[in-house]
Length: 314
Image 1 (spheres, helix red, strand yellow):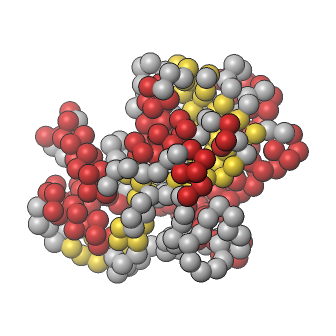
Image 2 (cartoon, one colour; image 1 turned 90 degrees about the vertical axis):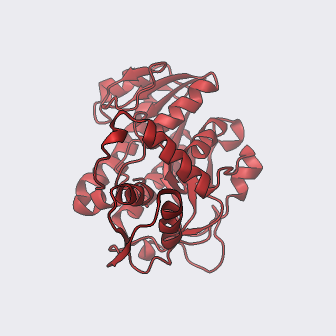
C-alpha cells in the first residue's frame, strides 16, 4: 500500500516507518526533520500548514498516519497556543489535504491520556464517555479536539479514519525528557533519580516496537472508522521504573520533587478491542524493553560521553 507518515522522523514515527517498510509498504515520510529518517523511505519536507506541499505529499497516497504533534506535555504547558495550533489545526490541515487528494484513510495518533477525561469507575474502553469538565491538561484537550475532527470529517465528507490511543511509549530514539530515558540518564551520570510526587502513580508503558507493529495491523479494513486503545500490559509505577533502572545500571539515590501540574493520574484501560480486531497485544516486558533501550543507547556514537538528562508524555 502507498502510505505517508507525518512526523515520520520522530521517536514513534520513525519506528512506524521502519515497520511499514518491513511489511512491504511504499512509505513517504512527511517531516521537516530528517533525524531518524529511514533511507528506504521517500522523504518530503512539507510543512503541515503549506497546502500545496501537503497536496503534493498526499497526491498518490492511499493512507496517511498523522503523528506530527507537540507530544511533550512540558512543551504544551510552556506554550499552549502553539500546541493547540499544531495538534488541532495541524490535524485539520492533514484531513483537508487527504480529502482533496482522495487519500483513503487518515490514521491519528492519540493518547490514553484522554481516558482521564472520562467518568466512572473501573476499566475503561473505547466507548467510555468523555466529560469535558475533566479534561484537565491542555494536551488532553488538543487530542480530544483532534479525535472530534476525525469523526466530523467522516460524517460531513466521508473521510475514513482510525484513531490509535497510545499507551505511554518508551524505547530506542525516545527523547531525554521522557521519564524512562531521564531516569536512565541520571543513573548513568551517577546523579539522583528525581520522582515527581509520591511515585505511586502508575502507567501502562508500551514498548515502541510493539506500538509500531500495531500501526501496520491498523491498515486492515477492520480498523476503518474505529478507535483503538494501544495500552501497555502490566501497570508500572514511577517508583518501579526507578527500581528497574537501578537494577540494570546500579544503585543510585532517589529524590522526590513536587508533582506536575494537571498530571495524568492514570486509569485502567482495556486493549481488548485491538486484540479482537487486529490480533495485537504488547509482547515486550517492561524490564526487557528498558534493557533494549540501554543496548541501543550503548550503540550510539555518543555513548562514551552520555549527555545530561533534560515525549509522548510520561
